[in-house]
Amino acid sequence: MVKKLLQSFGFRSAETKSRQLRERLEFALQQNLGQRESRANRASNHL
Picture 1: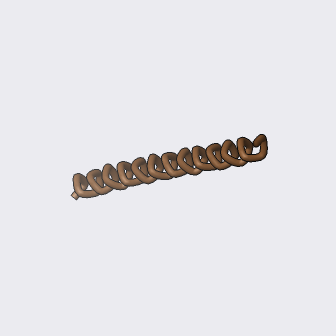
Picture 2 (picture 1 turned 90 degrees about the vertical axis):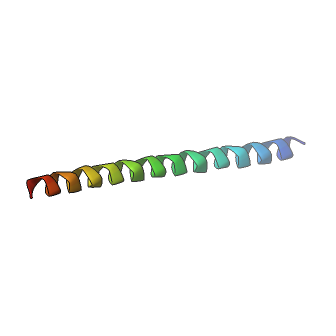
């Protein structure tokens, strides 16, 4: 019974970790896209 609890808890913690990583990745991607867009806007403004 304890083993099952530990296994389910370990799986759950691993699941939340991967979710946090995915959220962090998506956030970084959004920031990169935003920076790229603002850079493109600046470049087109110079023209």
